[in-house]
Image (cartoon, rainbow, N blue to C red; front, side, top):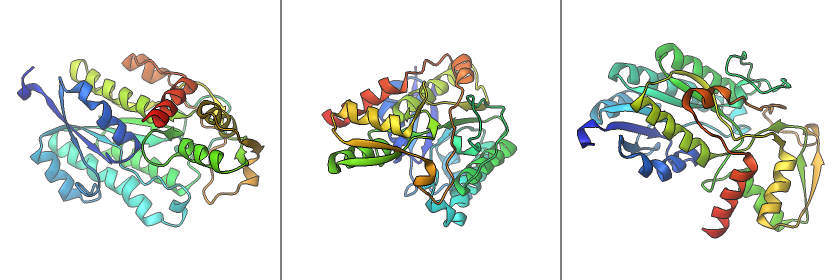
Length: 295
């Protein structure tokens, strides 16, 4: 394939967990795509004119937006900045994409739901966010689909990776430093290795190039269900850490932002539409910890 037939892909927030994984696996998808990785120092997505100019200058066909304000508890006080990044910047991206004929794949979160369900959340269940972070991400989805309805929104949950700071690294660190830990055991969800989500996004891009851009809202996490407590036990088992872990209730570990008690996502739609195979969370955790331990 000639360079002329390649489509240009802009990945925003590329220094984060997911952006870093996209960068890592992008070399396997260069037949059809040329990637441009930016973070806030290269492109401030809250600057509408800068975004519009960048998309125009680089003839961007697809935007994968991984940029987000994700400090869930801090967001309760840092409301203005949280909304600026998670809602207003998305509106700017949407307008710029529409003006320049680009398509958007936007990453969202399980926090758009209230966490009161007892069966996996499908994409058509009504949102009801309970935190500033969740509300800002929910409104970002609304702004995007209003300005650029032919977009893809991917909601994910409990993200971790070999990059950045995350729950897996924290539990490994504390497990090695302390004799015992208290971990919440009544919040249920599914851990997601950002490497798996990155590869799913790249396959969705490939599908968009060779078949069609299937706009809409999709859910992606790894397969299976667990609690933060059981997740910690598996982290320690795989990492060979000997530390006593005590299960506690959410009200014994108060946080500024309210967490969803149940945030298992149904993945049937993304699997059916894009033919994506999703690994069990335990398998992916083992891969991640092995990469961390072996460099």
